[in-house]
Image (tube, rainbow, N blue to C red):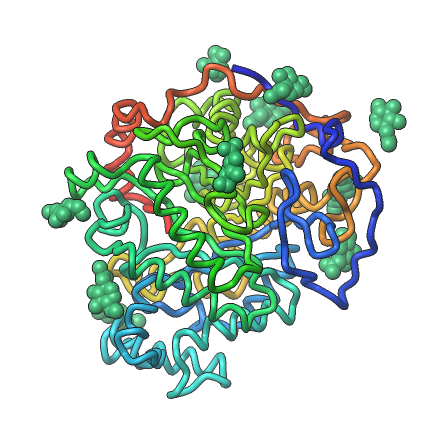
Length: 496
Ligand SMILES: *[C@@H]1O[C@H](CO)[C@@H](O)[C@H](O)[C@H]1NC(C)=O
Ligand SMILES: *[C@@H]1O[C@H](CO)[C@@H](O)[C@H](O)[C@H]1NC(C)=O
Ligand SMILES: *[C@@H]1O[C@H](CO)[C@@H](O)[C@H](O)[C@H]1NC(C)=O
Ligand SMILES: *[C@@H]1O[C@H](CO)[C@@H](O)[C@H](O)[C@H]1NC(C)=O
Ligand SMILES: *[C@@H]1O[C@H](CO)[C@@H](O)[C@H](O)[C@H]1NC(C)=O
Ligand SMILES: *[C@@H]1O[C@H](CO)[C@@H](O)[C@H](O)[C@H]1NC(C)=O
Ligand SMILES: *[C@@H]1O[C@H](CO)[C@@H](O)[C@H](O)[C@H]1NC(C)=O
Ligand SMILES: *[C@@H]1O[C@H](CO)[C@@H](O)[C@H](O)[C@H]1NC(C)=O
Ligand SMILES: *[C@@H]1O[C@H](CO)[C@@H](O)[C@H](O)[C@H]1NC(C)=O
Ligand SMILES: *[C@@H]1O[C@H](CO)[C@@H](O)[C@H](O)[C@H]1NC(C)=O
Ligand SMILES: *[C@@H]1O[C@H](CO)[C@@H](O)[C@H](O)[C@H]1NC(C)=O
């Protein structure tokens, strides 16, 4: 039990004091590495992710939205908000199909027809080509991913590639066959092959800075044996090593994000260096990869969707986040990590910024100076859970991707969070601030709480890891929460 502070400058680890001059000319100035709790560019300047998710993993396996807008228009729009990165999601099934097809990918016309039917698939294909005239009969799914990455590169947006699922479909329930290694669709060998394929393919994308191993690992409740025998940290550690090594063998430049258990809500044994149960090993970066300074942690938070005490009690939420892993960002942590909140989200409307949970979480993320990637960009899906042209109420874009769903949200809470995230020691973290850059943190708390009228002088402090919730090994505790929320998970809003 201890508390911690976000004070950025107290640690002896922060010795550098030279401030380099960032330059648009050498953007993205990769490859990136990690330095204590920061991600740094090739010159040692701090880089922060202020990003948005862009789905490409559901049934069509084509990045969403192109029947409504061009790739260029969409990237320009997210750039205009000040976002600097996307988490682009893909399905392992796409690579499985390429491998099974002699190395050749499927044209998007076929992909749309396969997922949407002959008539609607053809109509969507035609609309996509109308908006994006460089695409045509020969254009494949991966070439659309290439086009998204290339446009992001042109507009100086970093790309993070996320393996979201094995079988292409909307994600994530504990019953969907995609949840854990050796679940129905989640073949471990196909997975490492897919990671290596994308890591290698991504060498053509100068702005591909990082890849994740797998979105939201979770209880395989469709298979009791698998669940009781294999859903644990010991097995997690073995598969994480396979995944990181597959990526780094193919492309040692990339950062690799590690996601935790319980739908990526906890990495506690990693950040607290406790046994990876039921085994006794302790997580060791050098065992995982020959490039230990390439590892980053990612966590998600949807307490608003899952319910529980930390939904309505901000102190409780902050304590739980600390326990789950965020304590690794504290400057006096002896084993610091960079952490990216690679998903959090909520319905977007003009009153989103007034919501208690939204304010609490965004303030925490801002104060912690974590990187983050909000769920989500896509205002609609080609198809989601059987419904074509399905609306996404949690998106920052509206249904036809033509404008913000709520300008008030984007111009208020979102831009405030970007500003707070990008400001380190009073400098900009887009390639100019360095770890320990010689000035104190002014405690620019992120004004996630729009009604609090700018308190923040001095470094924000947070009570950290007090009597938080039970350890993730307390399966019954989690199962209770899970049962409580399964109906919601299935019926209302299953993320990603
Ligand atoms: C970190 O510093 C805070 C005070 O800012 C202290 O309360 C806490 O115990 C320290 N944590 C560690 C792990 O040393
Ligand atoms: C970096 O941030 C500064 C201050 O926000 C901004 O003026 C500049 O355009 C940014 N540079 C790049 C390359 O984004
Ligand atoms: C095909 O598209 C039309 C109009 O866009 C829609 O009403 C219909 O439900 C779609 N068909 C299927 C099978 O979803
Ligand atoms: C693994 O990939 C092969 C194609 O190479 C495919 O036939 C097989 O179904 C995939 N396995 C799973 C579990 O999806
Ligand atoms: C459950 O998982 C185990 C281990 O992968 C596998 O051997 C078994 O066939 C699976 N059972 C079902 C019903 O899918
Ligand atoms: C981590 O692994 C490396 C390489 O095997 C080893 O040299 C080092 O002692 C390990 N560190 C700890 C703390 O066990
Ligand atoms: C909120 O959580 C904190 C920390 O667990 C606890 O001390 C406090 O009593 C809670 N407040 C309410 C109103 O439940
Ligand atoms: C507006 O957004 C908030 C926060 O996400 C949510 O709680 C609320 O239900 C939304 N309101 C409507 C009318 O959708
Ligand atoms: C935001 O600030 C207002 C006013 O100071 C306060 O009433 C509210 O509880 C705060 N919300 C959170 C989540 O801290
Ligand atoms: C850091 O803050 C302290 C206390 O506010 C101040 O005395 C000190 O001069 C500051 N250091 C720098 C480098 O600004
Ligand atoms: C961004 O944050 C800084 C402090 O970190 C503040 O001085 C500045 O006014 C903010 N800019 C906007 C547009 O909110």
